[in-house]
Length: 305
Ligand SMILES: CC(C)(COP(=O)(O)OP(=O)(O)OC[C@H]1O[C@@H](n2cnc3c(N)ncnc32)[C@H](O)[C@@H]1OP(=O)(O)O)[C@@H](O)C(=O)NCCC(=O)NCCSC(=O)C[C@H](O)C(=O)O
Ligand SMILES: [Mg+2]
Image (cartoon, rainbow, N blue to C red; front, side, top):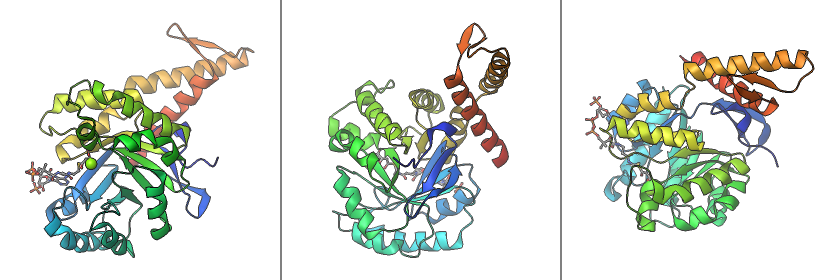
């Protein structure tokens, strides 16, 4: 299976331009992905100066039916003007089974974006349908329905799929689940999607935290998402960026430990051993892969600053 998204580089993932050139890779941090309603000119402009790793330009739920047409034109102008720098530019279209999806697809022609995000993906056929009308751009899938979760493995395996985004609001709605700080009702779905994404080498972003003024709550949820294995978090407000960027970045202690592990392991190898001990814990070659990925990610963040 060709890797579309290499896990070995930590969250500094390698996303292949796999539609045509599977061997040509580009790297991208994904700690923070900010949704912007494509109808909001002020927010589209503000985002050019915001510290997010990715932007999800939204034509779907954040844009009302009466605004859809003008939002497409506003987005076209914003992307033509550019200025979004290194940020991954993802356009979320409406579902192809809605009155707007086809028109969104038409509007993608000539639009300068890095990926197209399809909401409410239920089956791999939904992706196939989009792949036929949107060539040459990586496709991302929102997993936010029970059927989508159950089919996540097949969806992740699709050759055009480069990323998953969890839609935890829609998922909670369809499950009849309550919002809880520990997200226990969503845990099976979150972890099933993580398994599918990792099994097939695609990126995966956690869902949004709705209470955008609750910094402590956001921090807890980012920590949980990071610990589960997500590459980053989708966000709805600029005030959420700093927390996500910090939590999904290696800490100074992480970096220090990774460097000491690599150094101790190299010394162990010189001594003819395959095992080192650091802080009372064994370090084997697999731990070095994790340590190196963490340092790669830290370097990518440093280079960006
Ligand atoms: C939630 C908001 C409606 C709040 O907007 P507002 O009242 O304007 O907030 P502030 O006054 O605090 O804004 C301060 C400044 O920041 C700019 N701003 C606000 N939000 C954004 C943004 N998302 N991107 C860029 N810039 C933003 C304001 O323009 C102010 O700028 P300035 O005037 O220059 O100081 C609003 O934040 C918002 O609309 N957020 C996005 C909501 C959204 O996209 N929702 C859809 C995605 S979530 C989803 O669908 C998840 C999934 O599908 C699921 O099922 O879970
Ligand atoms: Mg949704």
